Length: 123
Image (cartoon, rainbow, N blue to C red; front, side):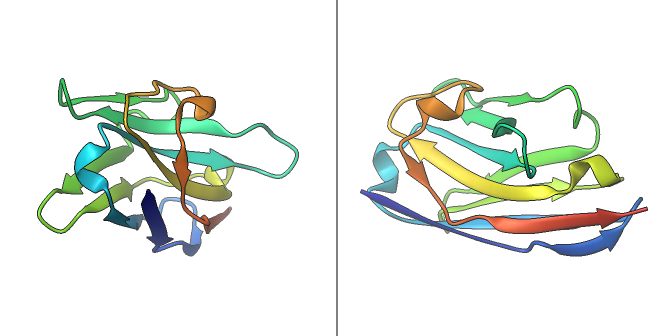
């Protein structure tokens, strides 16, 4: 089992920045797929950035490329999502996810989820 707890959300104006954190605990040594997803009201959950620890490859959604950066502190078991140049369309609940295998960009490929942290970007 893996437990995930997100933090760092908030309200910012367009053009601002936020850094989300996800503290992982439990059997983290067995998780090789991890990522950040978001879900806006009335919309389907979508992948923002996903990471395959086997290949050390990070995938980004086109909508966030060049603005968001995924990183991790393996010693502390913390994932980060640095979000710069935020736009109102980034407003959503952001979730951290993990799985024993790499689930790609499909949310169905991840077993473990945090409770989410709200990001609101005003124009």
